Amino acid sequence: MNPMDPLLIYVPKKSNRLHYTFRVVFKEILKADYKITTDLDEFQSSDLPKFIYGEKALSDDIFFKSSGLLWKRGIESLEMETIDFKGLKALFPVYDENTVIPFDVFSAIFFFITRYEEYLPFVRDPHGRFTARLSRSSQMNILEKPVVNIWALQIKDILQSKYPSLKFPEVKYKFIPTYDIDSAFAYAQKGPVRSVGGYFIDLKEMRWADMVQRTRVLAGTEKDPFDTYELQIGYQKKYNLHPVYFILFGMYGRYDKNSSIRNRVFRQLIKTLGDYASIGIHPSYNTVTDPEMLHRQIEDLSKVINKEITCSRQHFLRLMFPGTYRMLIENDITDDYTMGYASMPGFRAGICSTYPFYNLDMEEETKLRIHPFAVMDGTLRDYLNYGPVEALEKIRQLIQEVKNVNGIFISLWHNEPLSDRKRWTGWRKVYEELLKMAAE
Image 1 (spheres, rainbow, N blue to C red):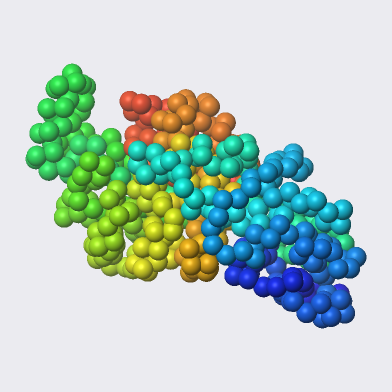
Image 2 (cartoon, rainbow, N blue to C red):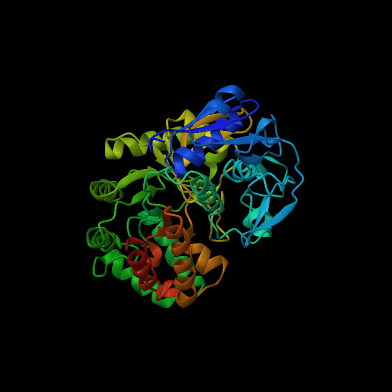
């Protein structure tokens, strides 16, 4: 057997869902070559490493029993029976003494990575989002496990146990830090109207220290507390990082508080960041229902850096299937980093590898690549009310989970926690430790 020979997979019939799922498992995660056939004679006469995926075993070859989901079309409510397998719960149990895994592993993977459950009716949170507590992963207590990667490696082990000479390419762990710039400055570059308004709010709430600091910043005698960009660039150089910055570049609104897109200092900051990192769009709150606004913001940001904008992350993580991704594709966005929850850390799609988006409405794989993140600063501090010690322990656990499967660890941080002041006191150290652990 030639180590470079492809896997041969017999299926009773082909489908878009099946092609997509096998591609994610074998191409995206395991980096292995494979061939799918519906010709049983070809399969049985082949000397290649091989397995059967279908309703029944047709030989003594490796057999994965199917539940049938990958041959269906359309979206329907599914029976969500679970089974325990190697210490984790799994979906789609199957009952056949010949199957090597007691659940339909490929259907389970498809269910998670397509976010099938988010196409079904659900109760949205105040921002229109699907929340972590509604997810099967959370209910099965596997949200903090990259189960798709874990299952892919178990498939690999099963194949290699039967075919010891079967080699898979080495896959290495990676770390990608990302930043959302929702508010580039706390006090500076806000314009006279917003600055005066800020004073009135400080006065009303008797925030005397904030009034003093605001005055010093506006007078130029103190650095703006959110201006932590030199520190970030220092981290990039120290740990040899290649981050992605997502810039909120829309008009001021209730949920959109960044500097004016016409502000010269703000525009220069974006250009400077672009010298050290990739720049993506952070579409403002209402773009999720306004395609024209999204298009305009992408164009405006592109003009600032004089480059095409090809990556994105939704502000407030407002992700609706499949409409949000469809709008991004229509605006030539090739990579999205929204896949994660605001309220809980972990793996929203059960995966810590990048992979293509599959549109369940159209039953087709798209060119948009999804980059799931595992942890966000605001999740730890604001939703879970963690202090720095608890936050660090949770971050450490998540990084180790990703390293265990040679995945990609993506963090989501903002410039505000790096100010190390007020409610974020002690969090600069948290981020420095995150970088140190993740970059090792």
